[in-house]
Structures are given as structure tokens and as C-alpha cells.
Length: 198
Image 1: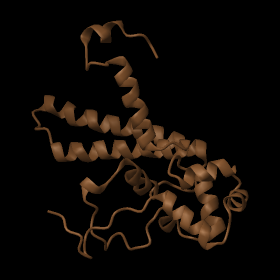
Image 2: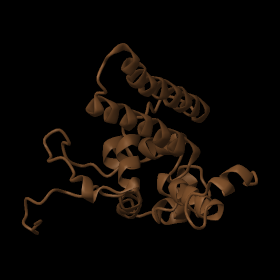
Image 3: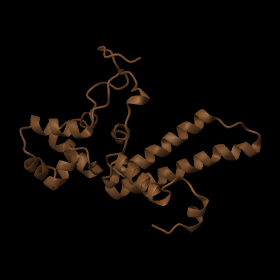
Image 4: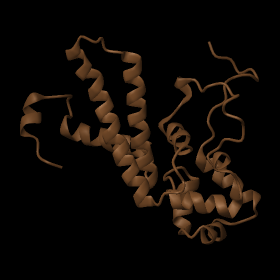
């Protein structure tokens, strides 16, 4: 059972909380900070409430305006290599997206980042296919390696979401809502064959 001792594994700090703390430490209102990073105040409010992730360009402007390392902006003020790994039960999709965003190439434009994400997704789908293709060559399925490839696929999806200004959690929720409309009582072959395009 988990306890609340001081050496308990640290939870990932959300980007929204970090951004809010950074702005306040600089003595800036939302309006003034929004002007400095060239976004609408409403957009900054969405970032600070965790309802939307900023684009790569906005993250870069935040870094330049605050002189705060990208890792720190994403909520990491500690040496991650020395820290205990997060317990998977503690990680949310927003946490994962923030972690994954640390390794996005910040030198790319928004459109370049989106294209990189698409190539990454297609590439990792090919890698996953490769694992199953080997079954026809008398290989056993390496489930651990397969899981890592699926993780890389998830990274590409997170990169696309971040570049598009979407929260991965919101994308997942929208998908669940679509599935509930399509299959209100669970999967049905009849509804699958006769469903209307959305």
C-alpha cells in the first residue's frame, strides 16, 4: 500500500500550474503575459486552466520571454534521470503529454512539427506491422518490444496533439463520446454495417 512519506514518488506537475506560477512570479497579469507571448488573453487562460496546450511556437516564445528552460516550463525543476520513475497508476494523459512534449524538436515550425508527427505515426505503425509479419517467418511475438513500439506510436499522437493545440485527454474524451453515439449498447455488428458517417 502506498504511504505519504517524504520519499513517495513525485507526481508530474501540470504545465498549467507551472505557467501560472511563472507568470505570477514575473508580476504579470494574464493580459500583459498574453501580449508578451503574442496570444489572446483567452488563450492564455485556457493554458493556465489546463484546457488547452499551447503550440510549439508559443512554447518557444514562453521560453524566450521568461528565460526558463523548457524542462522547467513543462513542470520539471529536478534532474529526471535521478528521480524515481513515476508510478504508472499516477500518470494521467495530460501528464504523459507534458512529458512527451519535452522531447519535441522546438526548432520546427508548427506545420513541420505536425508533418513530423504524421511521419512518426506512419513509421511506428510500420514497426508494429513488422512484429506481426515475423510471425509468418517462425518468430515468436515479442510482446515487450511490441509494447515499446505502441508507446512510440502514442508519442507521435501526443506530438500531433501538442502541435495542434489539443489536449490528448480532450481528444480521447471526444473519441469516447463518438463511440457512445455509434454504439450506445456496446459493439453491434448490425450498427457497424449500417452506421452513418459522422
